[in-house]
Length: 452
Image (cartoon, rainbow, N blue to C red; front, side, top):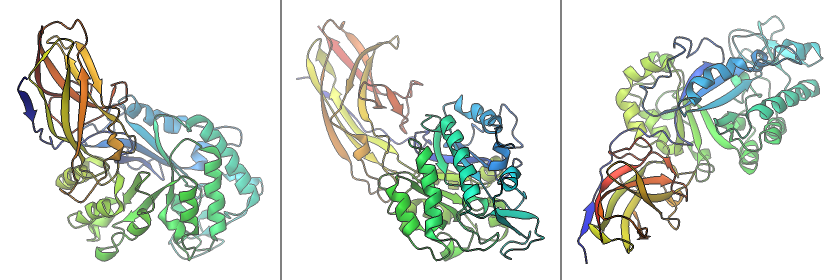
């Protein structure tokens, strides 16, 4: 029997760009000036490690300036820059803002929708002379026009592989699910549930995100439980808005969601949090990623300034955010006769905080010295989606043994063995933190001789 080759691949430390996880760049952040406005059209911030999603958060009024006219180019234009590089987009379309009078299109008011004005100083309640306007979120005219808008948006984006998630953004100031900074008017759980159901009605394939603040204003968990039952995930927009022990407040709610769907955490605007002294070294952001088992984290500031001042934090978060599939051991015979079968043995673990939601299978590919593929072996019995995250350094390895059959007629010679993760047909779909990438998400493990 031939001796076996055994390797213990090391984690490269590199950030992985994978589905259902990563850093989310706020390109539009409630208005068009933040935070992508300083980027040249050719600049997709490729130097930010782990950036996988560009987030387009805009008032509804900018997308539908007239009842029968839409301006999708405002989001499609920047989206194309990132989707051309294999990244994804996410959306929030808000109905109330604190820097634009009519986030809900003014023509909706003219159609008879009711609402209230509020002052520039947040949290002061209704003021008829205030510069900003918030709709009555129960108003039937408002809801009917919102329904039509969501139908049009879903016809365009629902089920697109380019879309990572879509927020329920039609309730509350900034689409955050509360009225603390606008009219302060209370709304019932039934109101929020009505908005959730409008999104679920139209976006039947996209991942929809519900805000943790849906439980605020004394509404309790009814909205959150309803969101869970409708298949939505959870997002928290308030990390480090407050200091120290209040840096994050909804980790317990996240436990309901993360085992089956990716959770999203968003920090306060980095600059103000830093300047108030709340940010400090940013370690509370990493704590939130751990506590929420988060898959997505926001870049809620000018991206290169954020990276320059938080490079080590970004590196540490990348080692934990979402899932991180590590191949810790692999072995195979050094020499196999053409046409014979042999065993590949390996051990895998998930070093991230969340499951590998897209799932996948290990595949082992033999290539000749000209980089031609001569054999692909997929372990369909081993599901990478079953690897659970754990505390740092505590993820247990799961072992696999794959019986592989060399193709008949394979010429004797020395071949290179690569590992990948992806479909049951052997197509690589997930990046692994390994050296030796062949630029197609296959990673060199070593060599094997085929003898006649």
